[in-house]
Length: 315
Image (cartoon, rainbow, N blue to C red):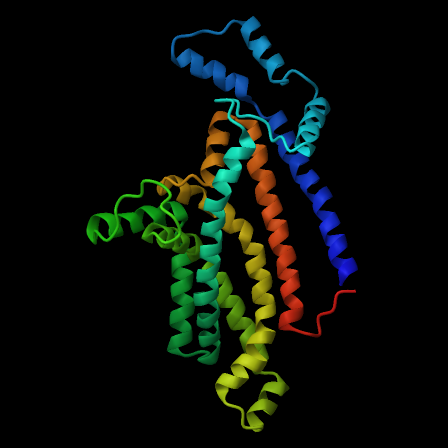
């Protein structure tokens, strides 16, 4: 097992390098760059930059250099812990990302807890009452909720909670994980992926219910609760855990509209600002951090497998 996880950890480095290279290449080949955005913003204030001033700005930020020179410089700075500075206000990008990471991470973990607490029991319940009104209600409701795009579901939820029911104030920023706003935002992030966990749990549970060892357990006189905990859920949770591990990236990026709607200082907001202003250093940093968190979380999912099924052995 030690050898396996050492190899997995070593793979993180080339994976992050590939993610950074592709992101950097897309930014380099894009039709606009930060200097172009500065030029456009200056024109909106009636200031016209001369070609010489534009060339000086490109040289200042190193945007007039070849691609591999720019990329090599960025990687070298990255290895020294320097994520660069924002093209807009010269603020350290790494500091801003580290400030936003707890917000997005908390929302992602909150959404995951909701998925586990609601998705797995509802999926198991749907499998237990297979082809009954309970099964149809759970599956159809989850499918109905997942059909709403986030940009539709969020305004509708805010209208109901803020304007109609008046149980929540207009979101004005990050209030912590104990604030009602946090639970609403985490629930909205999890709704579109809740159907995945429910259907995965339902399918896996149905397969286990048809197994011979479950029938043997019933013949031995074990209660349904004992059978569910000891025999069914431990085996049925393996594909569910896998799907949840793959959904962490959706949680991180699914918060983009949530950050804007709830005025949260998360990674989604930083990434949106970076895209709008072509702040490349901000885009690169957010992408790298998100990729790292996704890879790390999937590594932790692999650690859980042997706990669920002792037959899983890493050579």
